[in-house]
Image 1 (cartoon, rainbow, N blue to C red):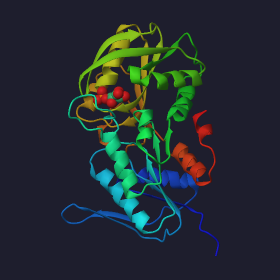
Image 2: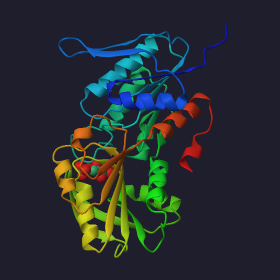
Image 3: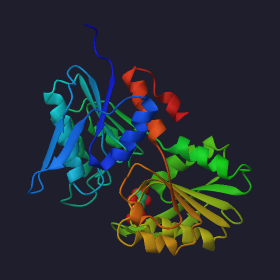
Image 4: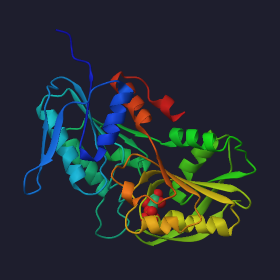
Length: 318
Ligand code: R5P
């Protein structure tokens, strides 16, 4: 009997829609998997098909609640004990990544905790999208592929603005940490100019704009970032850009968390449109009315296909 080289793909409850879309892209049936609860709320999972000797891809975003992380860990453990050949943790939104260094006394490095947990339970590799900081890859001793949502945003922008040009458009990073992403995106769009918001964060989730660096007057500003949570950062960035003379403001953000009053404060902002991807599900009733979701599924599906067949992923970054 030959080896079973099929792509075996399954998900936890945080990524059911992505599982469906990625399976469709890959032309495979998801592995029959049960994810439920005991009556006290404890998580119970079961992989209901033979996966012995298979390469298994477990899709699960780890946005709150913490149960999403536990589901992922239990699924990995189940796959390991079912003798899977390899187990890829496919984490479209990698939660707990924002605490990635000890920047105050007596704080944890939560991204490292996540890395330890994933490796300890038996993940052989990680595939994720727009990790909060690239260097989190170094917290792991297994391969970590960090995709960027840039190709899907590029397609969107080129369709929306067929007349993109250096005089009328500017790509904006809402903080210094996002400058690399903004520069890369600007380059892909034909070397558009970039601007940078110099912000201060007095407390978590509170952003104060200090300055806008770069010329935005009379231009359409396109803000790119990895996460939108309370919406405070992007709203204050948009107000500062408007004050400096930007004519229209578009926001392209990979992970749409939208916690607290995000919906209200973003609807009450000078932003024209907010585009997010579908790395986070179940946020539909928290989306501002100017938000629009586009799918990352084909990009992730292609990355899984390439990993499975040992092909290079670098073409996905070009
Ligand atoms: C910060 O470094 C991130 O890139 C985001 O700008 C931040 O997480 C957004 O948070 P919020 O929407 O709560 O301002």
